[in-house]
Length: 200
Image (cartoon, rainbow, N blue to C red; front, side, top):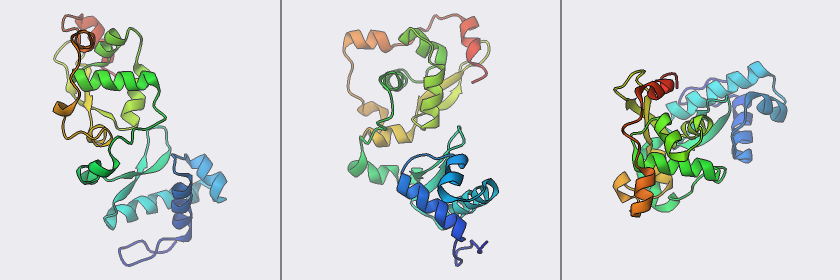
């Protein structure tokens, strides 16, 4: 493998993986990268490690992001979001379902909020959607609620603000009275139910 320092060239394997990720423009797991590059699993793992290190060492504007499902993709470095917002705002991930967008809006307007409170507002379980929004980095854990079980409290991320073209949460469109009632979380929910969020 070629040396990967600031003055060195990347190895051919790392350059190949980089090119495939660039051309495909979507998250790929190791199995697909093996299939598309002809490299074995260990070579792909080494290439990904090298690629991530090189991007970080050389201060690139994009980074190699590993998702919780084991897939990899390129994403903007978070410190550039403010400078990119005016040009690339509202580039919302089109793979988000209506349910995911609904859940995201609930978090945005009611944060900080627990998963149980999201479930109560939506009327259905939201476990998988909350995980998806965390994986896509639209929401994040911002603390723990001071009740039995100390469930996670969720809030929106800088990526959410960036992609919706917002400077702050205060820039969100105002809700009607009816919508406000729907989005307000239920403060009097039982601590037993809250405890179920503890393992998220």
